[in-house]
Length: 347
Ligand SMILES: NC(=O)N[C@@H](CC(=O)O)C(=O)O
Ligand SMILES: [Zn+2]
Ligand SMILES: [Zn+2]
Image (cartoon, rainbow, N blue to C red):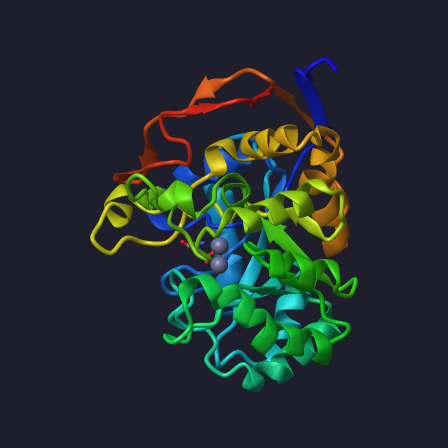
């Protein structure tokens, strides 16, 4: 069969994105706005976005930082804490600009210190979200020191996520950045209200890529990269056409000095080449025809939003990723820095 050289798909959306704030916001945002129509914007700023007023103010800062002429739409989220009230959920929904709430178990990941410690105590808030039809987005890892970091996602499914999904049959839940075969099975076997996002780095790399032959801090993210058998399960879920798996980059930039450190931050920056990297994954799986569903349709359908009408064009033209990009006063090292990416977005 002749190699596909060009691909036209509906404009994709990123259903899990970190844009950060302040002097780095414009630098980070430009990478996503060059190709994605919308993105679910994560609220784990310092301090986190815990109420509707904060989300609306952050949204304005994002719109102000957009490149001229861009019609990128930020879809805002609230960061759940032990103090979030059910009333705030109604306010968030009524704003028309908040599209979900994010559950970070306290201590699970970057800027999760203010996250939830008492999950059962949050049930009245989940109840309010179910009523308001606001999806719950979950960083699905237990935080217990006793649990091995490679087992934290699996344990979260059994101990935390399964009970929530069972208790709230009308609540849409997105299991964010799934990294294990167990998570894939849980979502596939779950109800229509349960979906998952999958990142480009978890589709492309296993833990050897991060740890064998030298430690590569720019591949360190949470949940941590897993064994090859898990990566293969993710590839089959993403490329298999199942409507409850969709694109969420978890592009999470950190300044180079925060990553190349004795105690480096978790997060991989991928927005500079996100759709291109997913195209590589789908091509390798012989599933390029399914890229559009995963990247441009399944997420919008799950959130109950219209699909983007415009299209983008991808061409099979390799290019070399720069060693770093501007990040406010610092630099960020992107995924694939200094190496080739097989696809590029053309106008
Ligand atoms: N994925 C990460 O490793 N880091 C994210 C937080 C998150 O999504 O868990 C970040 O904000 O840096
Ligand atoms: Zn996370
Ligand atoms: Zn994230």
